[in-house]
Amino acid sequence: MSAEIRWGVVGPGRIAEKVVEDFAVVDGARAVAVASRSQERADGFAARHGLERAYGSYADILSDPDVDVVYVATPHPQHHQFALAALRAGKALLVEKAFTATTAGATEVVDLARETGTFVMEAMWTRFQPAVVALNELVADGAIGEVRSVQADLGVSREYDPVDRLFALELGGGALLDLGVYVVSFAQMLLGRPDRVVATGSLFPSGADAEAAILLGWDDGRNAALTTSLKYALPGTARVVGTTGWIDVVPRFHHPQTIVLHRDGAEPEEITRPQTGAGYAHELAEVTECLRAGRTESTVMPLDDTLVVQDVLGQAADQLGVRHAEAVDVL
Ligand SMILES: NC(=O)c1ccc[n+]([C@@H]2O[C@H](COP(=O)([O-])OP(=O)(O)OC[C@H]3O[C@@H](n4cnc5c(N)ncnc54)[C@H](OP(=O)(O)O)[C@@H]3O)[C@@H](O)[C@H]2O)c1
Image 1: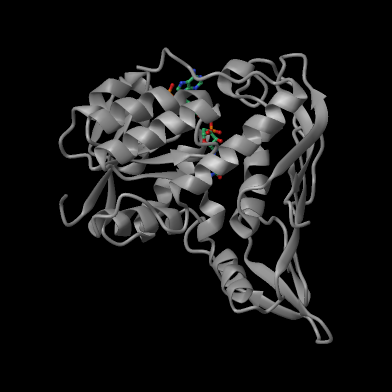
Image 2: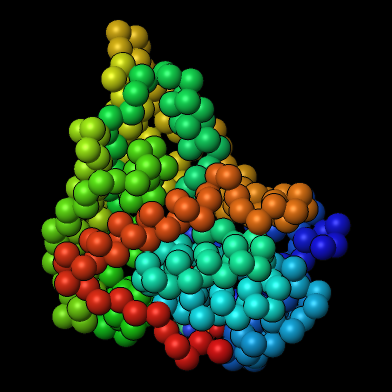
């Protein structure tokens, strides 16, 4: 591994355009290459963002010896096959949320990462937001007692378009994998693996889910009430309730700047922790630091957590009748 961690980008779409800009504020990391299914799109992305090399196929970036880690920003079902090939080629990975389209796909990627001793992390940027780090510190310090309940919602109003990745089932469409992953991951971060998952909602004509409410239950009575939607906007609130108070995350909770601590019997305390760059810099810094330290997993976003989140999403999808599958034509 070189002293500077050299990054490649795969799938230069909407999110990759934003994330790549944050390398400017990450020490010891540099984006050097991009791969697209089209040479023209790769060239355009490289030119816009000052990258040295542009590949017109995903396979080509895997044989570039001067790429240490690849940021995978394709639609969710296109993560799995590329990730397996990248691990076999010895590339570390930062894989966009949702990690994969299915629990089986996620398990296969995690198993191969562990077998090959190669670093992989889900790009769940929420966990690295300084305001969320502050929330976790308060919880660990016992500021609200024992966490018993988490409430969170995240939804946007989008006009149905069957070919858009948000709605097309073969592109992992639906609220669950795109936005539901945030509410589920937030609850999992605070409460761990649930004992029960109950989901209700509705589907688009494509078979992708349009809206979902998910209730998570633990045998000791803890719970999470979560809502997601692509049919209507939801405010993006989150509340963490403990035995001696609660913390509100000021919307939108998936990349917040401010949290409000309500301790029993005390005035609310507002805590603001601005993000660096557009908020993606923190996850890029985590991966960069892990690689420099020779670690194969992040302790902030461990692979076991990713697997639990994927399993909850899978159970919710099953209950709603959504049938996700991993793509097999990626490389
Ligand atoms: N962290 C965040 O804030 C955030 C926000 C939005 C999205 N995301 C995640 O990032 C991923 C990509 O989302 P996006 O909104 O950037 O999607 P997008 O704009 O559609 O871009 C995805 C890119 O993937 C490539 N791709 C590979 N196979 C494809 C296929 N069969 N159909 C369409 N595109 C394909 C395309 O690039 P080429 O054809 O040029 O290779 C495309 O530009 C998703 O997993 C999503 O959940 C994260």
